[in-house]
Image (cartoon, rainbow, N blue to C red; front, top):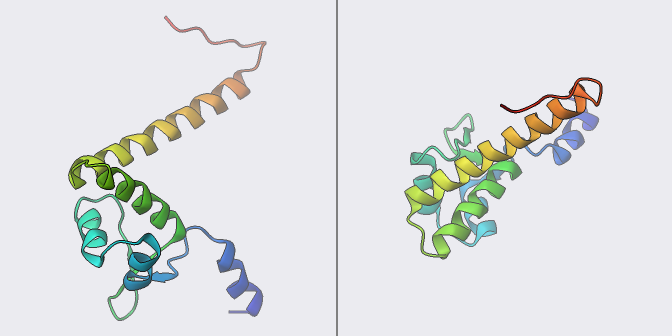
Length: 112
């Protein structure tokens, strides 16, 4: 691995750079919270060779959204489901926008 390869990881949202302790500290939550959202299958941290959980920046953003909902009084299981549905909706909207761009004005699609 070259130095350039190592530095490119700094910009990679999916690179599992954060330990559980550091992730919990950054989010202002407990390690138990991170375990709970993992058990609810909201995020699945990668494991180091020693078996320690490692989180990416993308996963931390998802965890932060779940924490926001829990802080507002939403049960953790419901918060995880909401975040999953929000993510699915965002992806569907992205796909629809791409479809509209590729259909163009000469091939308009209609909804029945």
